Image (cartoon, rainbow, N blue to C red; front, side, top):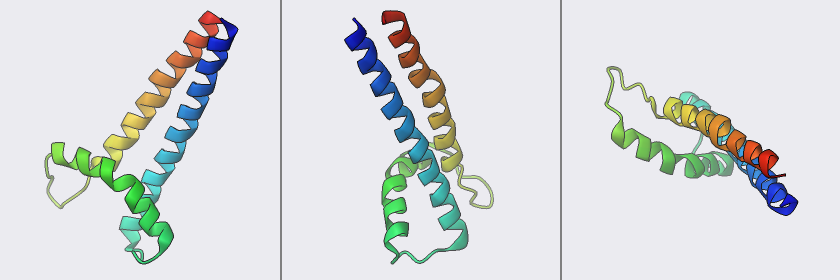
Length: 99
């Protein structure tokens, strides 16, 4: 059973790192949108391509507020926080219970 426990720990760690990195990409996308960065820059294009599919899905379900304030990055950040706290910790706890 220790092999399954080690597998769960590895999956939890990879998921945690991926969510952490994606959270920083979302924050980078917010900063880029605030400073009107050059979209010909490959880094800007990468961040936009990595974050826009998720943000666009969230935007479809959010109401439009006065002033055009985009709440989708905040919703995505909350979702990332939830996934890191609930799913990743649950995987670690399950691995500990098995092992």
